Length: 329
Image (cartoon, rainbow, N blue to C red; front, side, top):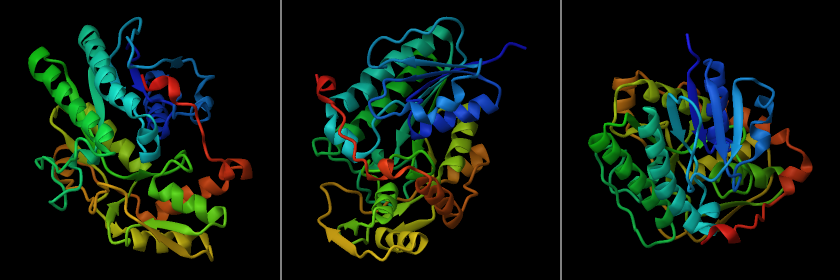
């Protein structure tokens, strides 16, 4: 039996690296691709010695060539945190549009099935809670978050167009807040921000009054949902996330209890267009994929906290200042 080959873009990132692990475990030949703007080779360096793993340093916004047969493509290349996509807005738009177009063309040429990583951000600041896949969203296209939100909405549109017009096998996952080992500290997302501040002995920053909600899914659960969706025959978007909703203030208190920090909570103004609610309706995932999250938040947070504690003091204190200038063209 011929070994199946899968291309994973954004492979050195948080989710991409866990996907590489999963598909290596499933016996695939993994072709990993990343331009390393926000990804980190340390996330996948344990795979470099394997014969069924290859890494390509490449920007998918440019033409993508892969020699030989290709069975699957997972498109996870994109800045995913507010700090990143506010620094590199043009690159964020390009990877969601040009990058997706290039990879859909590759999927068409190779006869490969392609899954794209969309996001709960397509729902914007929702007027419906929980958010079902049928909800069209409440998005400000010209606000500061628009470069990410609209890149993902366009990504879904062009993916569905390739499916309906060209007959390309496509899958669309809408990812809700996910956490776990290999998240980057100081990337602007709430969990690593809170844990990073606690470990450094800093006050914990809550934006707004803390009443806004999020729903946190442990990375292992998310990866399993993505795997099931890729192997399914369902082409429309599917929410993958944990519907256990919690306010940011409550979550902050959980982090304080977990880390044992004595620092106080500092409140700052809520950023423009920051979603007030975020909770997935996972009915489709349950019915179509037989999937639902298994790891409760207390267990997942402990695993994640232990990971961050294992980092060196230098890594904990480091705030990244990458040079993004050449990408905003």
